[in-house]
Length: 261
Image 1 (cartoon, one colour):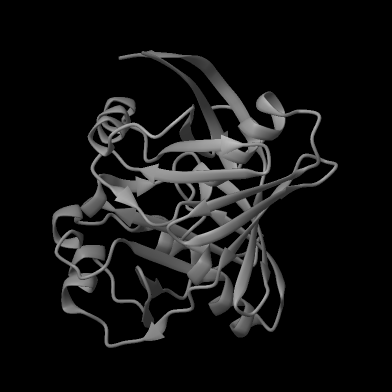
Image 2 (cartoon, one colour):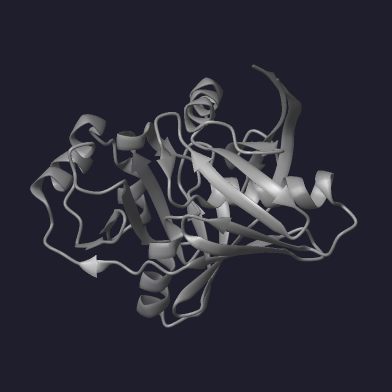
């Protein structure tokens, strides 16, 4: 069996930056075990698989270890592949059916892709001792949604964190977001998810479902710009829509090839 695969760098305009995702269009769903093995073989933070025809796609996301319920950069990458290579003549809108409901991605004239995702505002909580120990620093605030979100006072604090990944895997969350106000953007962040095989994710769209409502409320702004402070780095364009959020970024193709299984 041959499966076409694209590797796309998301949330960037140049290769070797942003967050790489594999994208595999399928004629029909393969067994979950096969999908998981492909994702493990790719060894990227996410591999996106989709099935469907024009205007109606089912989309799923796999880390090297497990399937997840929501992924931003691989959704951005999948929409980029569909609009650029599979249906280049269609209107600039893609709709996906996913484990997190219906997700839309709209491409603007300048190539910027905006995803419409559910908002996941965090609930304030006590600061877990394992979180402080795992990050090596005590945050000023902590919120919990799918992930823990630890808020720090400065961009430098976020940048200098050297997490203990083993400790972070013991927390009762999928991952850990760390964030702070920024000098050049509205806010910065990093994201750690060793529990699902992603020690540090380069640019995490789904984390912004929690980041956007927090920073929108704190800064009194509906439209924000953000930067993820990973080694690869990436810019994220954000808008708070109350129960939804818009998460925007660019994407660029790194490779196109064929999987043989």
